[in-house]
Amino acid sequence: MLSAMELYVERGFEQTTAAEIAERAGVTERTFFRYFADKREVLFGGASELQRIVLEAIEAAPTDESPVDAVFAGMFAGAERIGGNREWSCQRAALLAANPSLMERELLKLSALGEAAAGALRLRGVAALPARLAAHTGVSVFSIGFDTWVGDDPPGDFAECIRVALAELRELTAAP
Amino acid sequence: MLSAMELYVERGFEQTTAAEIAERAGVTERTFFRYFADKREVLFGGASELQRIVLEAIEAAPTDESPVDAVFAGMFAGAERIGGNREWSCQRAALLAANPSLMERELLKLSALGEAAAGALRLRGVAALPARLAAHTGVSVFSIGFDTWVGDDPPGDFAECIRVALAELRELTAAP
DNA sequence: GTTCTGATGTCAGCAACTGACATGGATGCC
DNA sequence: GGCATCCATGTCAGTTGCTGACATCAGAAC
Image (tube, rainbow over all chains, first blue to last red):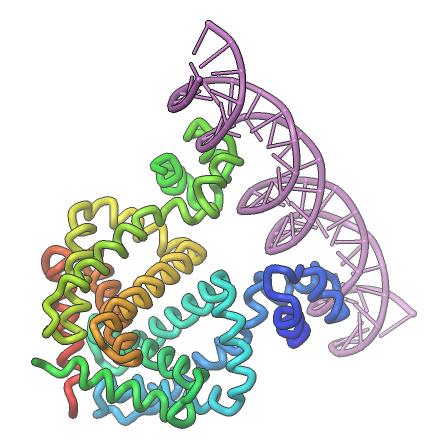
């Protein structure tokens, strides 16, 4: 709901009651809770779509591609979906940063995305441990790239931020 | 509180009220909420100590050690703290797996640990982006290693699980 | 036109959490 | 000993998130 986002930005998340959101949306509080599991979930409507896009891209990756490459095919597809509206992303990021309970939910969604991506890798024949490692590493880089992108001076668009982060990570983990 | 953990295991997290925990502990519900910010926080008493141990180990690492090595010095120190009581870790992991709201809190704590570790790296002169990447990668491997360790057939103790995961990750991210 | 179904409203209620104030017991000082 | 002080806890009332049960009502299906 856009009404909820507006109110959260206007007066803060904790200071906004479910009844107020419902009222602005023109429905009852009870109806609000029929659409959203809880007050936080309003901000995560796009999560399932993002996950779908990521998974489809992983599945669509060439079978001979490495697990990490397949995962990042998914991440770049996800970045393309999000990368259009930087303004909105910044606003949302500020809200999350200011409200630990919202950040909790975000982290849960990201973790679920990681597990789902790991599942997609497993379908490609990757063993359990490398699947989880590659998938969660991908999500981690995605997330840190996002932070860079909504930060003060990003080196480019969202995808570019991810590329930069991935290159840096490869350098960091290069065997000694 | 041990009373809380008992009750959560006995009858489940959601089915346990704060009043019941307080009663078993011999205090008032109000007093319970003076000690713990919320119902979930009871299970995360050790988080601050873990963070302290990890940070101290990172700070204590030789100055010429790479960021990743320093982070893993911290992770192994943390693993040593936790690795003693596998039984308890398994019970706790089962609780988290069964309760998304508890998992949320766990992820928030792990994320905070990652940010704190990144801060410790920055004090060693590491730039912001590589610091966050190394730190969160370390936490991610720590967490996946933990899952392996409390799983069905771990390849050894907690530290060994982390070593295995780290080696696997290095192989995965090796430049193509 | 009736029936059925799905979305919404209404209402009562539980449980998580909080603020304000009371109380009591330990501690320290004279 | 007596007194002041402080800190932990109890008491109580209240708000808010969230849920179950049931009523209502509009539109689709027949």
